[in-house]
Image 1: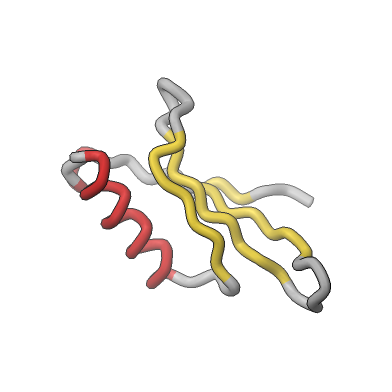
Image 2: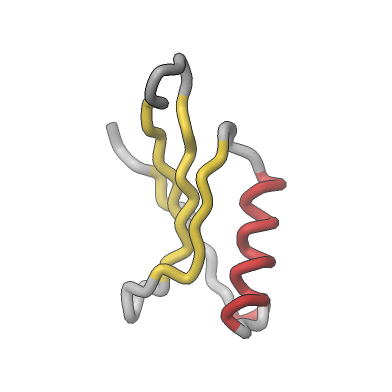
Length: 69
């Protein structure tokens, strides 16, 4: 799952884009925009995406990928 910072429009601050990507098919399994970087929203995204796509959580291999500036 990667996360990327983007400057918010009209406001001072950042948005964080969380993306879950199937690295073999390049299919976006799930995504979310958040106001902060934290484990709770990331965990919620993983759980909801797994449930929606019918993926058992134990099948996952999570690789943290951070964007470079």
